[in-house]
Amino acid sequence: MLKRLMVLAPLAALGVVTVGGSVVAGIARPWQLGLQEPMSPVMEKVDGFHDFLLVIITLIALFVLALVLYVAVRFNEKANPVPSKTTHNSLLEVLWTVIPVIILVVIAVPSFKLLYYQDRVEEADMTLKVIGHQWYWSYEYPDHGNFGFDSIMVPDDELEEGQPRLLATDNKVVLPVDTNIRILYTSEDVIHAWAIPALIQKMDTVPGRTNENWMRINKEGTYYGQCSELCGVNHGFMPIVVEAVSKEAFAGWVKKAKEEFASSEVEPLNMAHAAGAAQ
Image (cartoon, rainbow, N blue to C red; front, side, top):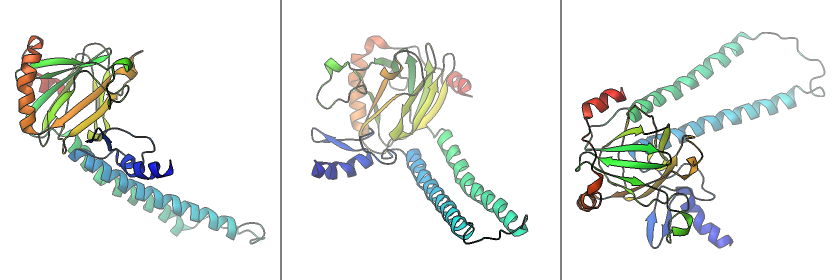
């Protein structure tokens, strides 16, 4: 058992596991430490910012611990029987005001840069439309024939080998790697949230409104997510599965998908209207 844990621990820490000889990324694992392995440019920056903050927080915690221990030893009743009556120390008061301000500025600058980078929509190569329902997802590909399909969780008694419980779906979202993808989000009923941790995707789908985001997937693989908004009794049964493939494989999948989902063609998407609604 110990040997098995020693082998699985490094993979779990990266959020990577081997199923049936193939590598599956983008899923949380037991005993995992830290964030899932970043698989998009934004997630890479978020992961780096997380590590940066962890260093700052650790240094602050160690400093406060050292200060508490020093005070406890230096100023206890036995070591300091006659307490000082000092009430003010100008230098100390300036330091404990200025140093926290400097720390906050050091944190704020990269934070604002990351927020801007995450929010701005890159020059998109394609568009994916995500529609939330109670309790499943629908997807549309307006740039590839305007077909669409529903994606519903696979019940426990229909799971195949290697499919994770509560995360597998009957239809996967297939997307190409190394492609700037504009994502438009909306909902047919209540507020949902389309979230995939490994790709740093988390955006509310709101009825009557179109929200906008973007992503770029670095590596081929399968990425899992779930609805992250409390949307009703079956909130925990709205999984998301994104399969990232090469551009050539994606083109082949689109040809097959057009035939498979031919009866699911949707109204042409008005990009100008959608962009206006996203504002």
